Image (cartoon, rainbow, N blue to C red; front, side, top):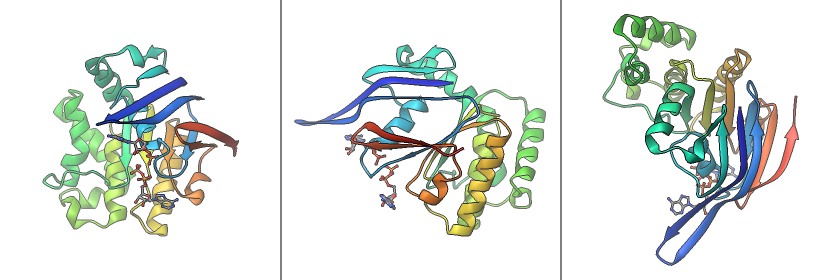
Length: 225
Ligand code: ADP
Ligand code: ADP
């Protein structure tokens, strides 16, 4: 599904040039659950932003389902992203002014899904995430665990083939964290590919493979299952 080869990314501020990704290479198969680990500053977020087509690279290649994304402009990347990728963040990133229902409906509005179909799909996914009873509430009225379930619902409502999760349990206690990891596992067993950045060795064990990074490079890979 994903082939990354010699990926490079630089950030320049004043006289300082930081190498965030230094000829990073790896691939991810359809249906895999991959964890990416490494110390703060090693390039994990940069990598996830490039895989998620939110940012572009400065060198190397990134192939997603046969598309050479590194040649794509912002519009083409956005189009590919909308139909293929769901995001789950550490800080949930829900819109406080919108209800649970409206937050989850948003990606369907962006992709032009008709109202009747939107209602059906939002209700289906809210049921699945066991958060239907809170659909009229606003994010601030929910616990962290419930907010992350809403965020997962929003990430999957468009049936993405890939979920990118950046420290999905980073703001949760262990019980809510495990619940979110179980949800991700269930989605993966249903066929969704997952790439997750984590600092937690516990969470990484839910994956099939751990890629460890240091200074913008891959240092090791462990296959777990
Ligand atoms: P990102 O760049 O994706 O935001 P960071 O590397 O900045 O990720 O870290 C995200 C959070 O994890 C921060 O709150 C940070 O304090 C915490 N963190 C960083 N390194 C570790 C670690 N080794 N173990 C546990 N938590 C960490
Ligand atoms: P991680 O997610 O592993 O903590 P990042 O991808 O956030 O690592 O950062 C990789 C390197 O790039 C770090 O040295 C960081 O300071 C630098 N970096 C990240 N984003 C920017 C930016 N917008 N401007 C300048 N430097 C950045």
